Amino acid sequence: MEPQYRKASESRITISELMLPSHQNFSGKIHGGYILMLMDQIAFASASRYSGSYCVTASVDTVDFLNPIEVGELVTMKASVNYVGNSSMVVGIRVTSENIQTGVVKHCNSSYFTMVAKDASGKTVQVPAIELNNLTEVRRFCNALKRISLKKERTLHEETFDHTSETALQNLKDYRVRLQLDKQK
Image (cartoon, rainbow, N blue to C red; front, side):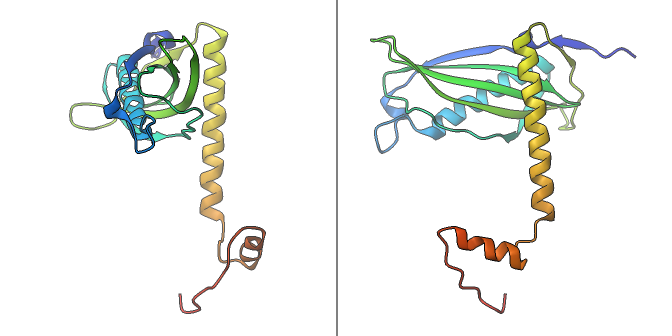
C-alpha cells in the first residue's frame, strides 16, 4: 500500500508575542522557562497540524539561549516538521526577538522537539510520510538524520561506558574535580 504523504510546508506555524513584565526573571530578562513553554506549544501545534493527531513531547534537543530577550520585545517563533518516523516527528523551532522601536532583530535560539502522535486512548499512531519540496526542507531532513544518528551513538556510549574503570577515574584528573571516593559504595 502506498504511504500517505503530507508536505513539510503544511506543518509551518509562526507565532509572535509581545514580552511583558510578567514574563521576566529576577535579572529583568525574559524567563527562559517561559520561552520553553511557548516553544512546546508551537511544537505541539506544528506536529498536530502535520499529523492530524494529538501529539505529546517525547524529547527536546539542546536549547542554547544565544541572546537575552528584553521586556517589550516582540518574540517570533517559527516551527516546522523537519523529519518523520513512524509515529514521531522532529519539529525545528527558531526563536527571534525584535526591538519594535528600533527594528533590530536577534536570533535567540533554535531547538528541536521530538513529538509523538497519539490516538484518543493514548496509543501511538502512524503519521503521514513527509514530502520535501525544496532544498531547505531537504537540508532540514538530512540534519535531523544526523542528530538522530548522534543521539543513538551517545546513548550506546552511555550504556557501554564503565565509569568505574581505572582509565575513566584517571581521566578525571584533567578536570576541576577532587576524587574522594567512599570505599564502601
